[in-house]
Image (cartoon, rainbow, N blue to C red):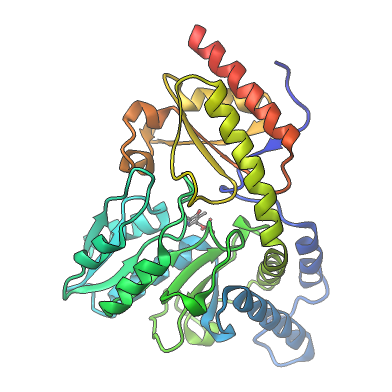
Length: 384
Ligand SMILES: *Cc1c(COP(=O)(O)O)cnc(C)c1O
């Protein structure tokens, strides 16, 4: 195997390249249109207008109103804000949150922090494919429950959660419902008009936008405490000079996603299924993690029996292939993924997992090269 000069990028759940059209529309706001949108002169007005257009576009793709969109620094801030603000309203006392065992660290570690502040948290188990059961959500509600937070789609295994049903349970119980939709927005259709979702997080860099910008949707009529304190930006709810180029880029990425999601989803699903089938059929001891059908278009997550995922990833990198693992190197030790253990995978299965996340920019030829390379590497590792 030789060092490849062309990279095959299959880690779109970690981040995406910034779409060329997105780069183009951002440029003027880093050049001559640099005004602070809060100022009074015309230079500011053009920036303010661009932010307003981005807000309208973002809202319209999601079935929301522009005034329900609050721009933030990304998915992590949006998740922190949603969870903190609801608990702060109760003084962090006598409050209870319901979430799942497979949330992104931005939700999970915020819950851990809130627990230290006195909040009680229920971490619901999930099915073998990673699905949260809406009936269990309903049963977990108690008089102190202030928030349900369940992700729209999982970043590791791609499982899409029953958000409509969980929303119905939340409404029936009159509990606020937040969803971390960072992996879903721009990838699968979302219509907030027809979902009982009260708050929703998204991030631009997961859908062809720039890093460091995201949003929190807050349904009209729901009051939230600010998380970042300071100036009166974002109707007094999120302080800080607006990241104009970032917001403009986010808006453009949303516009493009709104127009091309269906077509790109179909292309991506075909690539996903081809890669999944080849790996499962041609590599003994391989097993799919996550759901077969209720799954993000680009997600392939497979455990290879007896293989150290980290080693496989390093060898894939040497072959010019970017993918991710089901374990995170934390403080020197490799900890198996909380998502894979929550769906019942053993520690060694979790360690042996690799995640490929595709987009419509990948090709069938790349899929075949990746499948061939993984096959070759696993055979080599097993014969050592
Ligand atoms: C990437 C990601 C986040 C964090 O978003 P950032 O914009 O990188 O802070 C949160 N939740 C999920 C599900 C993600 O995939």
